[in-house]
Amino acid sequence: MVTASEPMIVAVAGFDDFSDIESAWWRLVEDQQQQDYRGPIEELQSPLNIERVQRFLESKIRQSRILVAKEHGELVGICTFSRDGFILDAPTQVWEIADVWVEPHARRKGIATALIRECEQECKLRGADEVRLTVYALNEGALGLYQSLGYDVSSYTLSREFNP
View 1 (cartoon, helix red, strand yellow):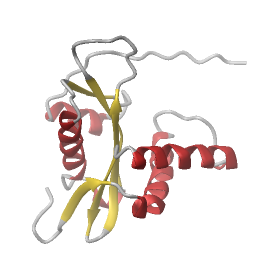
View 2 (view 1 turned 90 degrees about the horizontal axis):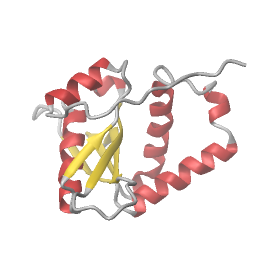
View 3 (view 1 turned 45 degrees about the horizontal axis):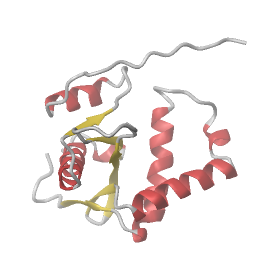
View 4 (view 1 turned 30 degrees about the horizontal axis):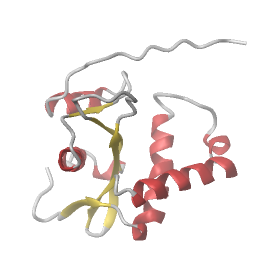
C-alpha cells in the first residue's frame, strides 16, 4: 500500500500530462507484447501508429476518460475508462475499465488498486450501473488483483492463429 512517506495522487489527466501519458502508453504496449504479441515494437511504433495513439490519448484526455497516478510528481500509472459499445438502448449502463498500467518500480504499492477504485467512482458519476474490465488470461497478477477487488469472470475470449 502507499504510505504517508510516499504521497500518491490519482486524478483525471489533463493535457499537461500528455507527454508522460504517451510515454507510459508505449511501455504498456511493450508489456502487453508478452501476453499478446503483435510484432516487433519498432514496427508498432510506425508514424501512422504513433499518430493513432496520439489521437486516441488526446480524445481520452478531452473526454476526461483517462486517469493518472503520480508519486512525488512522477507519473507512475495510467488507466482509461469508457462507456461500453453496446449499441442497443438498455436499462443497464455498463462502463469498461481498460489499459491499467503501473511503472514496474511502483508496482505492489496499491497504485493499480487506487486507479481502479477511482475509475469505478468516475464511472458511477457518469451513470454506470456496472463496470467491467478485461485482462489477459496469462496475467495472473492482474487477474488476482481484479478478483480481490470483487471482479468475477463473466466471459471468455478465445483466439485462433492462422499459420501461412
